[in-house]
Amino acid sequence: MADFLTDQKVVSRAYLVGVQTFDMETGEGAELLGELKELVENLRLEVVKTNLVVIRTGEQPKYLIGSGKTAEIIAEAKELGADLIVFDKELSPAQQRNWEEDSGLAVIDRQEVILEIFADRAQTREAVLQVALARMEYSLPRLTRAWTHLSRQRGKGAMGGEGETQLEQDRRIVRDRIARLKEELELVISQRATQRRKRMRKPVPGVAIVGYTNAGKSSLLNKLTGAHVLAADKLFATLDPTTRQLHLPDGRTLLATDTVGFIRRLPHRLVEAFKATLEEVVVADFVIHVLDVANPNVAHHFATTMEVLGELGAADKPIITVFNKVDAADKQTLAVVRAQHPEALFISVHTGEGLDRLLARCEELAVDDSEAVELLIPHHRYDVVAKLHQGGQVRTQETRDDGVFLTGRFPQKLKAVYDPFRHIAPPPQRKPATKRPKKS
Image 1 (cartoon, helix red, strand yellow):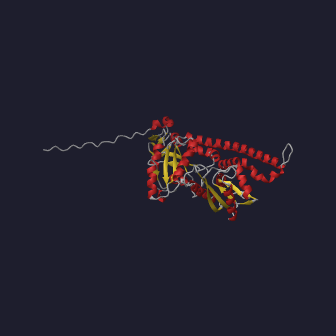
Image 2: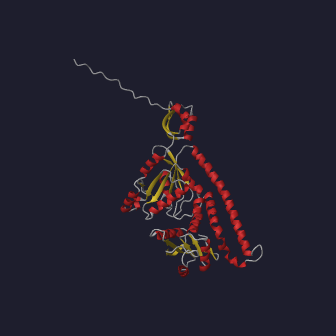
Image 3: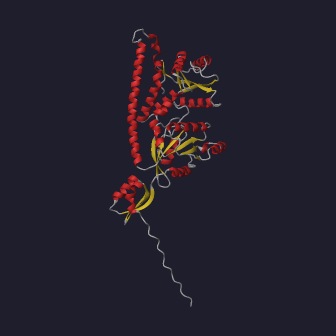
């Protein structure tokens, strides 16, 4: 359950406020509000109403929206029994404080909702640290929310009043906690880098699976690799990167990594906090960008993912654009998307349609320096067999009377090891020509 508190009570009923500004596309505010509703429901909160507010003259500094509309929303939220107001647009600390003082309710924005979801889903030590750091950095300028009851206790001495002193102490505690979290996170990141370097010693190409949250990335990884990564129909089901071996039809192996899903208006501090997780995208040889073709907002999802890839410096990498869930899309939608993305692949993880073409494309992009060879290694050189298993990809192994027959792909750095044992098949023997009897 979410831990937003008001008067020591856990909130359970949310009133959502979306915003449509003059610089947004028509209908974009409603789409984002629908997305916010799904995010809030992922926190197991009941949504009592969604309200889209149109801002025509610019955002107001005190409440974000006009004072008249503010009073109307507060009255309706209380009438519906809501104990939480959620804004789809980011609120400044001052705006958040003004709303809470006037309404007597907990008031949060989209950023805080996403932070709560991440906190709820984080499993590994790295993800827990990253979420804790992001939440601390978000809360630091908002600490006065927790100390509004002390604002009347200010004194006139040089040290300030009791409330002011307590607030400064609390800020110091949060800053110290942020410093410790960064230190711990640096250690975890260095450990991940060590693990990555160990993987890179073995010349296996890597692919990162990216895309909008809930597009089917984890399901695709499971289908291609036989893994059992959580693949739930909810936003941010996967927060921690998962790497599995993907065996290509030509016998080579890829390291495929499933990454955290992207979302519109993803808090920038989360992009920074999850830099270690998203670095899997940066070090990958190429990227599989998965989209849900049946989603009506697929164009926005495409733009969001490409924007985040650009922030990471990975937009110039080879990218395979993959539209998933073709079995759930209508023919007209498919025709439009195919025309807009003629280079893309269209698949269904559920039915397996198009996966063969995806694997063929992966073979084209999985460039390495390995060579496909056939080897015949004497029985007394099993040390060579062990080195080839450790440093390459052995496809078949057969014990024969004259040695161990191997087929596989091996990197050039092992060429001196395997080259002396190349197997050269003897030429096929021709049958002696039979002489025809002479005619008498």
